[in-house]
Length: 111
Image (cartoon, rainbow, N blue to C red; front, side, top):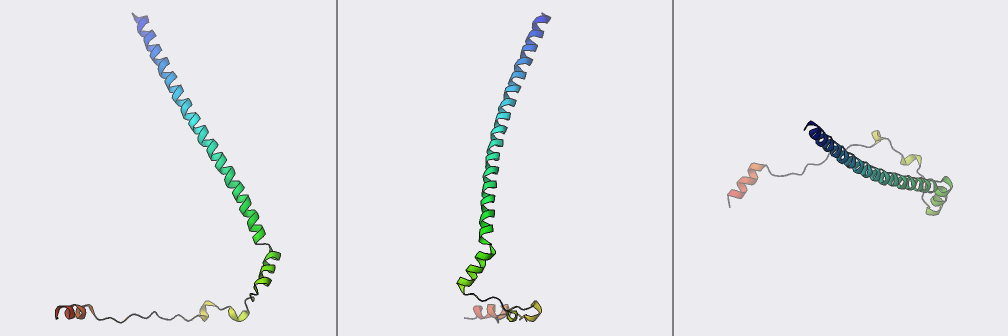
């Protein structure tokens, strides 16, 4: 009788371990898929960043900027156009004139 109970117990343990291993394998496969997707996304982002850096290098090339400036007929900023913050006078913001609240309420009650 004891041998029979031990065999059933070992069979249940073996089935439990098998199920646990199967579930763990499925989880690992899911994580591998997620990792592959992230790797592809990282590679795409690196390519896009490389392209953006190349575009930025072309757009900010000094010879190109000088040519565009000459074509646009824009004058360079002169010394007289540059001001310091102390030179700009702060003006107070005008407050709109309104009637006091009591006067508005009284005028509405009297008609």
